Amino acid sequence: MPQQRRAKITRRTILAAAAEEFDAVGYEATTLSTVLRRSGITKGAFYFHFSSKEAVAEALVRQYEQARDEMWRRWTGRGLDPLSTAVGLTREAARRLEHDVTLRAGLLLACRHICTDVGDGWEEMLDELLRRSAEQGQLRSGVDPGEAARVLFSALVGTHTIGMNAAGMPERVEAVWRVVLGGVAREDWLLVSG
Image 1 (tube, helix red, strand yellow):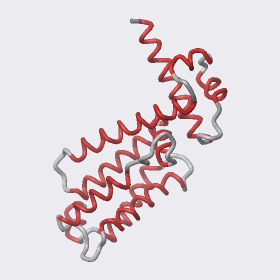
Image 2 (cartoon, rainbow, N blue to C red; image 1 turned 135 degrees about the vertical axis):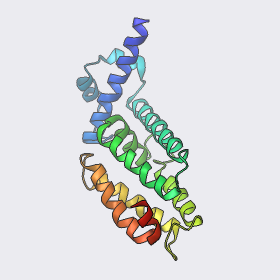
Image 3 (cartoon, rainbow, N blue to C red; image 1 turned 30 degrees about the horizontal axis):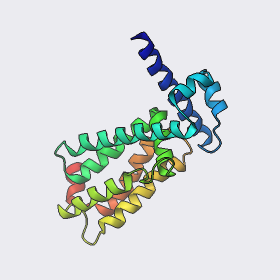
Image 4 (spheres, helix red, strand yellow; image 1 turned 180 degrees about the horizontal axis):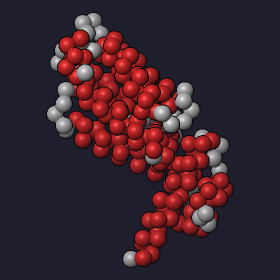
């Protein structure tokens, strides 16, 4: 049993070190030697767990996807209206991404389609929630929910890209929602959700 525990710790250490490197310098600029140096793990221990840098990136993307899907299930299962669900879901994601480098690295890898063909999944989730919002009459007359979702997605991606780090991400997400909701949400929804 102690050997299994040590193996799990080693694997987590490698993932954390790789995530920190990917987050700091990007996937392409990260080398195996920098991951090994940052983690303090030997090359042999690395290859016991992963066959390549790409395999580490794939594991980080999978962790990110699992966390994203878990947040989605939890938020959509709360019985809130779709617009409140979108706001709450993205707020939680911003808080988690600000503090969890492994999730942040997985998101960045997914956005760049490294080790995934699907992308990060957020545009599709926002599109679904804003379409449901339109069906429930939460959006202003004339607002195209697909267009609103694309604008929202772009603004949320920009909260990280422009800031060049995750510090302050929740505050930037709040600012995005203040502006977007003012333009797309019906006045009565804004008053009730206030």
